Length: 165
Image (cartoon, rainbow, N blue to C red):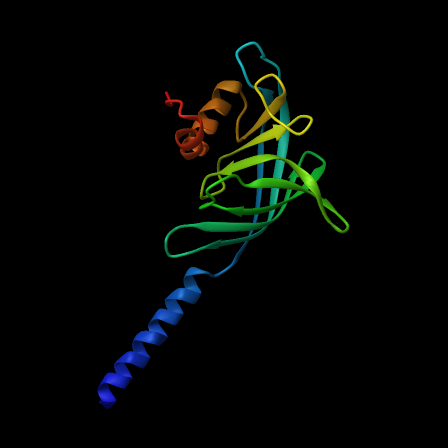
């Protein structure tokens, strides 16, 4: 009986250590240069855009990750609480002294924070002619569209139902 209790205690201790390591928080700071552009074939103008992430990232045993911190796009700062397993969208929030005053759009990030896309609203909504896309890192609209397809693949399959090229 004593051996069984020892094994149970050992198993619980090992599980607790693995669990704590899996949810260990990592402070990250990421900087990217990319572009802002209007979606659609009729729009060719691209604007250089800088992006900075600063905050805490957590990853669990199932490779789901969370990020909580600030996102700076050029000189504008936003708050982001991101979960990779979200069934809907992850939103970029506009910080205010007493909370948030709203959000500027949706954000899609790969698990290493190497590629990301932001669907930025104009007047509270987005359409190919009434909103902009931000893609990082990219220098051209072609690169940006490849990044969008990579990071938005699950969303496109689930909600838009458009086949990816």
